[in-house]
Length: 310
Image 1 (cartoon, rainbow, N blue to C red):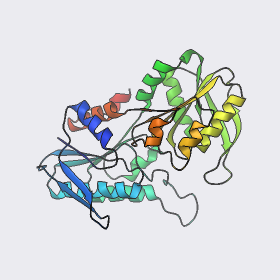
Image 2: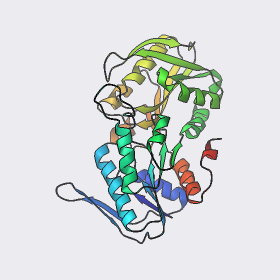
Image 3: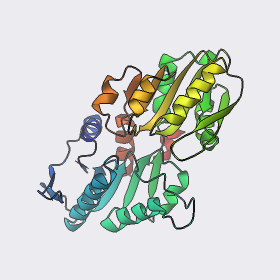
Image 4: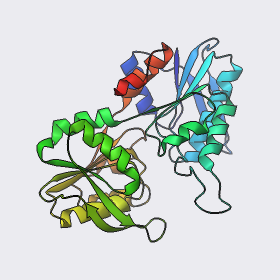
């Protein structure tokens, strides 16, 4: 078995390798003067089971191209099986046609990854579960919930806690977490007036005096989360924390979070944290390296991956 990392999230790849006691394979992923990507695998991979660790986060197009070119290099080097490990799957939010004459980019990206030579995909908390069906190869969608549950139980008094979905679309995810820690569920009902903006309308559930835990898969601009936190506090919540898998945090999101009603935002390292995230007063990063390391080990030895979440 071989582990190979692109440039998207090298620290996470190194943490996974350390957890598995398996060194990263030597590979050169660099750019020419005109920014074309060049890849050279610097050790033998013939007949090997190879895992490429490469979230397709910002800059998404560059990191996606790195993944495709690494997969092509491995395929042409006679690797036995190539697994694309995508802790964060970029373009996942473009999973349907919201209006006429628009693409389904998530499907296009899935086709590209398959054509490049990937035999299997391993990812975490897809924005929509049906994206697994966009791939014509086996796809394992892991869940960060076990990692979050451990952290919540260590830091929050669950006897007075309540899990909150920041919108109706995230109810299934929030309900699953609430069931794991055995607390009630509330829902934020919001109306989005225009793309990138949200207006909180109502809170479904009694949150007065509760430590509220907002749960979602992606935080991008942070507007929805900050508005939800403010609405919960106005309804009498004791405090509001948020547990989000993928910290995209684009634009002024970090500043927005720092000045919000959120007591704490907890994200995972599926996307490499920026310096602004690392020094933010109320943002904390937890790792999914152990989860991914165990999933990769089980995949390589043909054991069950779904049993990780039983």
